[in-house]
Image 1 (cartoon, helix red, strand yellow):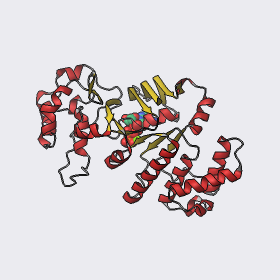
Image 2 (spheres, rainbow, N blue to C red; image 1 turned 180 degrees about the vertical axis):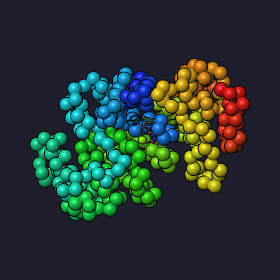
Image 3 (spheres, helix red, strand yellow; image 1 turned 60 degrees about the vertical axis):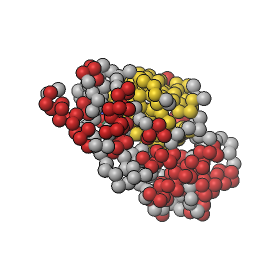
Image 4 (spheres, rainbow, N blue to C red; image 1 turned 135 degrees about the horizontal axis):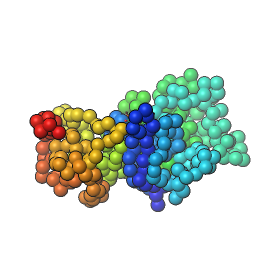
Length: 345
Ligand SMILES: Nc1ncnc2c1ncn2[C@@H]1O[C@H](COP(=O)(O)OP(=O)(O)OP(=O)(O)O)[C@@H](O)[C@H]1O
Ligand SMILES: [Mg+2]
């Protein structure tokens, strides 16, 4: 059963000129107990997607169309009040920065207990305090430290405390936007393992936005690759890594440090994602794609299935023979840029 179902979602930002189409017609689901990773270059709309789900878009951001169903109910059609109660009870957010997320004038324990009491009416104080102790143990903090104020914590400890707080209401869905960027690698590893253990206990699902391939490999069941506001490809993590069918995923994979072969040359794709106000017609990746043809510049790509992958590309049938074997060669990616300059398109 899907915990979250996003259908044809469009999230735009109002600007002086044309609106920025930051998320433009995305559809996907997150199943019960599943971890979905969201990857893609800076500016492709990952945080916008998370904010739209949480209902915390900035003033100029709005949902232009589509549905966000949580447990079958459309969040976009709900009253603000109902949505808010959903947000805290069922969907929780692990924020990118834990610095400002805790109130400096209360101890960490007071804050977590207050949040539990507010959302779990009738809970006994002693029980709420026990929960704080348990959560602190789970995230690897000494429970006696819960009685300290946030400023007495290090950055890493604050992040752990935030994670403890996010998990205090047994959320059905956890949204994590770059949850571990502030942490060193060893701590990041520990934290991810702990989140995983907690998840197993409460069977929650998670959507993880990250730039870090090891985070994806370690925590995700499926991966959604975004490009310029669109879903480029989605599927099981092994298939995305081993046999992607979207040229962008192939290129992105080359740009990721390879955990097995860290010495291998890293290829980053030349060029930049397109302007989204308004976006180009046709495939948004066409201008950077080694396989692009006229059709790609003119027509939106169809959705194609290969194994467990869903890919939006006109040329998935050419990946095996024409791109995959040569993807590690930098010329493959440079040639497109040069070729385009010559033809003047
Ligand atoms: N408040 C805003 N007003 C106008 N445009 C915005 C606003 N916030 C984001 N954008 C634009 O929307 C697009 C998506 O931004 P978003 O922050 O969702 O990207 P992202 O994938 O999270 O990037 P990053 O990896 O850098 O966090 C970008 O083109 C960005 O410039
Ligand atoms: Mg972001």
